[in-house]
Length: 290
Image (spheres, rainbow, N blue to C red):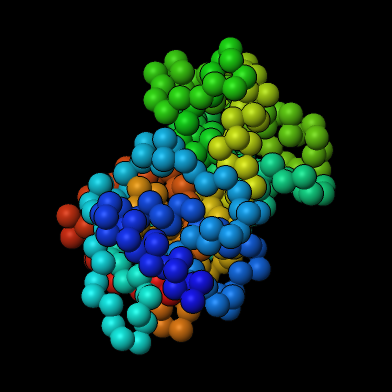
C-alpha cells in the first residue's frame, strides 16, 4: 500500500504539471535491482540517505526535451502503476567510473580515464582538441561555469573570456590531480595550461563537488560521456523522455524499464535529440517505467 501511495502522489504531480519533475527526487543505491517492492519512478519520501537532487533552479536551465510536455500513454491492467511515457533513445552506457569527489578513490582517479578518453595519449593542440577539453570542463560542473575570483560562484552562461577562465580553473584542478595521483597520466597538461592560461584549482574543485557530489561518471558506446546516477551500470540506456528537462538513465527489466535517475550529457541538454527527431533521424519510442 505504501508503494501505491508514493506512485499516486507522483502521478498527481506529473499530471498536474505536464512535466516529469518528480523523477528528479528518485534515488536508488548502487546495488539497486528493482526488487524492493516499490515503483522505480516514484520518489520514496521515507528515504533520507539520498543525495541532494539537482534543484529546479539547476534543472530548468536545461531543455533536453525542448519543453515538450510529458506524454503518458493509457495504463494497461497488468501494470496499473507503470508510468508509460514516450521519448528518444540516445545510447547505451559502456563504462561507469566513481565520482571524482569520492573519499575512497585509492590510487586511481576517474578523471584520468575521461582525460585519456578526451585528450588521448598524445594531445594535438588543435582548435578541436581545445574545444574537447572545454567540453570536459563543462561536463564536470554540469554545464555551469566557475568564476576566476570567487571560489563558490558559478553561472550558467559565460562569455568567451569567462569560458576561458573556467577551462583554466579546470586545468589547474587537473594539474593538482596529476600531483595527487602520480601514477595517472594527464597528457599535455602543461602545454594546455600555457595555451589557455593559469586558473584556480580550488574554484573548480569546489563547484564541481557542489554540483556533482557523489554522482558517478559514464561513457557511452558512441563515445559520449557525462555525469549519471549511483545505481547505473554498463548496459543501461540514456534516453530523453518528453516532459523531462534532463536525460534519464533506464534499465531493461522484464520487458519494461526501471528508472534509475537523471544524467548530464553535454551534447543533448538543449533539445538536440528533438531536433534530430524533427529531421527524421530519431524515432519516438515508448518506455514503460515500472
